[in-house]
Length: 105
Image (cartoon, rainbow, N blue to C red; front, side, top):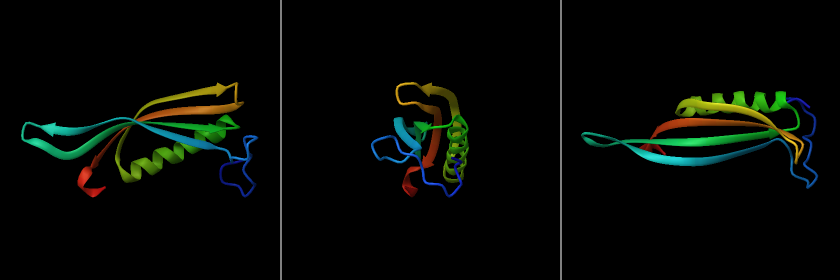
C-alpha cells in the first residue's frame, strides 16, 4: 500500500490499523536566562513510526517532520531505521528538540 492511496490500511492481526506512530516526551525544560525564565519551553521528543514497508515509514517521517516544523521551532536530532522481526514491521525512530512559547499552548 502507499501512504496516500485509497486502499484500506492493513491491520496488525489484532484489528488495529497500520501504520503506527508512537511519540514520547523524553524530557522538557524551561529556558532560563540571566534575567530569569524566558517563557520558552524546550522538549526532547522521540517519534517511532512502524509500517509494513520501509518506504512508507520514511514517507510518514517526512510528513511528521513537516507537521512539527510548521508548528514549532524544531531541530531534528537523530534518524534511525530498523526492521522489527518480532512484529514484522519497519521502524523509523526520529528524535527532535522542540522549542515553543509556553504561554501560547
